Structures are given as C-alpha cells and as structure tokens.
Image (tube, rainbow, N blue to C red):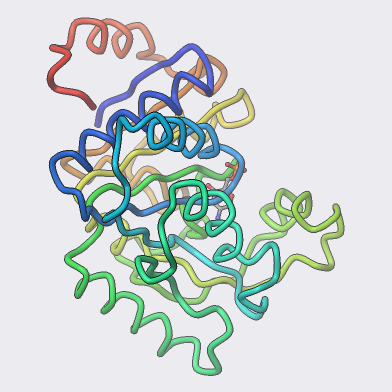
Length: 261
Ligand SMILES: N[C@@H]1[C@@H](O)[C@H](O)[C@@H](COP(=O)(O)O)O[C@@H]1O
C-alpha cells in the first residue's frame, strides 16, 4: 500500500485526477469506479478542468457506481445515481449509456446485486476504483464487520452513517434510508487499482486503522492492505494519527516521477 500525504484536499484531487488522466491516455475506454460523498469532489473538479482544457479525453470512458440507497427513486436528487450524474457524468460529458450501477429500486434486491456483479465482470472489471472512507472505516457502504470476501449485496446502515449522511437530506435523519446496496469488499478488491482519498482530522482514526492497523473486518478499509495496487491519499489532517507519516513522506518524495501513483 502506498500512502501519499498531500497539503490539502485540492492537491489530493489534482493528484488523483492526474492518475485518472494517465489511465485514460493508456486505455481510453477505462472503467472508472467512482464514489459519492464530499471527499471525492476535488477529484471530479480537477478532472473536469482537464477535460475542458483538452488535456484529457473522457469521451470513451465508462463509469461504475460503488453503492446506492435502496428504495429511493432513481430520479430522487440524493439517489447516488442522481448524484453521480450531476457531479461526474454531466461535468465530464459522459452519457448514461456508459454508466453501470445497481438498481436500488428493484423488487428483487438480491437478484439486482448479483446482476450488478455480473455486469461489472462482463464490462471487463473496474480499472481504477476511487474510494472515500467513513468515520468508522467503511468503504462503499460496507459497515464495520462486513465480510472481507463480500460481494455486492444489501446492507443495513449504522445509525452513525445515517446521522453523517442526514446532511444530504435537509438534516432530517428520518429521510435517510436504512438500507443500501454496496459493492462488497471482495468486489471492490477486484478493481485493478484502488485509490482511497481521505481529508480532514475527522478521518484520522479511520485512516490510521486502515493503514497501520491489522487487516480486520472491524475496519473494512483495512482490506486495502490485501490489494497489490492500493494508494491512500490523505491531507495533513487525515494523516495526523499515522505513526509512519515521516516514512511515507520520505518515500513519496523520493519516488521516480514516471511511476505516478
Ligand atoms: N457511501 C458513502 C461512502 O462511499 C463515502 O466514502 C462516505 C464518506 O463520505 P464523505 O466523503 O462525505 O465523508 O459516505 C458514504 O457513506
């Protein structure tokens, strides 16, 4: 696992957007796994700026969703499908025909979950999966004690995650669904490159457990330690509880630039 400590969220966004641009130059129809939440927004903004300046071409790129609320109509402004359309697809000029996501409105949710895993595999797998992290170490919506081998499935949100996400629902927790579909940890680990972005001191404990703690289901993001190409990008706040911060700074500063992340 590589840990890159950046000055702020904006620099983190630019670094990851650069890696995505490099991937798209190598593979124009790459399947990009994207996450919702506030943290990845600087990545999407930096990538959009690159598209507008002509530095990167996203016309053949494909987008895959990480997770979704169960029961919210697809057109609900806070369904993750709507959020991704607004924050990723439209700014990057990518159409819904290049979008893969689970059906959170399906009558048969387990069948919809299995269908999504099959669709990801049929699309050739995710090339780069961008991840945020919950304060409890969750990735996607894999809450603590999720199986590290899990596939896409339905999960019940913890009260903390519903409280955290109420800000997207007028601060009204009653509007936050209890159930979600999330790519499983086993599914996420199949992506070729995992890039987790965490910013702010509020994520410092979760980041320390992810990077320096044991691989354990209590911290789902610690499963990244099992992946051969995982990059954790953190700002100073999110890095503040890393014991090996100086080591991470030193190795990244001395890395050959052509390697990228
Ligand atoms: N399902 C999403 C996660 O994918 C995201 O990483 C997390 C953190 O969100 P934020 O980046 O806003 O802190 O929120 C939600 O739970």
